[in-house]
Image (cartoon, rainbow over all chains, first blue to last red; front, side):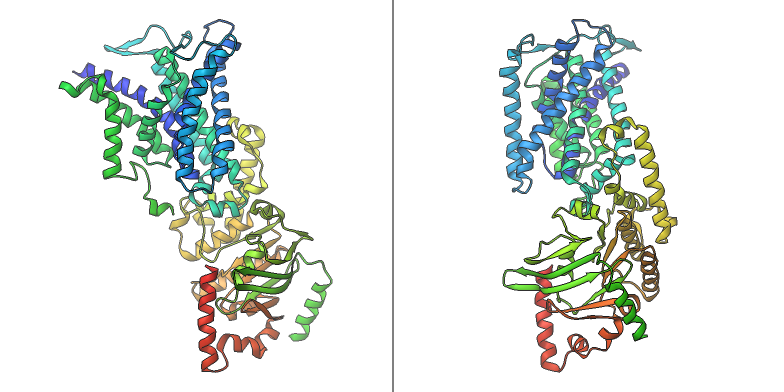
Length: 314
Length: 285
């Protein structure tokens, strides 16, 4: 009983870390431009494919541990560039359009990115075909035999995921609260007009928000690849929706809320899979729980766990 | 008194104006909110802008700060037309406060002032992430400067309080500190004493003198006549978008037209002026 509880907890925290890393991207962008960037799940996917591409081009076939940071850097660069391109080409021209326009655009970008990866990734010489699952390299150190602590099995990639979340959260805290650009981001999310009049370049702050979210999504993409041993062009869809739920659960616009929301959602999902009996039990229903939680949050606490009421923000 | 004031103005007139509005007109549809106003501000002087409600003071202010592009006429700051981007206006050396306080409510007092330093600092994303030496030096400077400014406006004890938890008078002073953090040459204050008690008003007055003594030019919009006549070197009175008179506080104070604009001539004119004023204000908002 306790063993299965701790197993579920460990799995849930891993999953939750993954959601949290992606959720930050939704929440940062929303906090600044009040846009739900539904293409963010695809940025996560691009991060994973970028990492594989880096492995193919620069890895030289080795699986040694030092390939990991190189792949991570490659994935981050790919995700950030794609995110900045979508901002510049698709969202910025719609900055003053009614809010439905960028929302629909986001869905369009999402489909576009999926199809672009599906159709063109494999055409680049040396790259694996992306029409079906792409194998993710089993890097030494973060894959291989799992740790077993008191009967609880913990994958090495799970450790990587949780550690990555911890490091990213510390980094994020430092960036947002202890740097000039971070303060400008906070100021912009609280009152964009005044921020602009204080000399803050809003366009730049928006780009930084997109880039920041994309970098963390790429870390998540890498983690996902290591956990599942393969990636595919559709992986961003469900992960993106769940991370969005996590961001809403934590209180959209609140960075720490996104981290907390991701962890809560991951653990809840894992617990539900372990403990819900009968027809609703088991992993077949796992995706349902996230959305049930989303609906419950929207009904009973629309501002989320850590979110301020909208009135306070205005 | 009058002789000294006139001398001072004459001396100022020989210098290059820091801010010069030339025949500025601002039209909103059929309404002429500001009508061919000329206006000069010299370094180191305090200029007052008065007028009854709806006289177009705030609209004129917004033209000066580049928030509105005047329908005709132009505004020269430091000899050149201001670029249309607020960021460049701030960088050029113009800072302002707002009629209704616009602080970053959920940031601390210190952070608010540090945000004001944004345009004078340059650490980019990369140095910020790796926390390089340039970043750390700049960050330490920003913090020290913000602390010093809080002290300057008399808010040294409240650096870590959230802006929204500060008393009203302190919020006003914090806004001034934040504006000063941009290293302005010209500070524009939109009703800095609105809602203040007499003691706070006196403090505000001292603070503005202190700012002037640092070599800044200050433009103040105010309703409080005693405050403005005590404070300013020169005063411009706007009535229904037009410059009624510009001169020393003494000249403006004793001008019958100013008194008339405020108090009215007789019952009918007074009523007419009030309705008019009301209409204008709605347009401005």
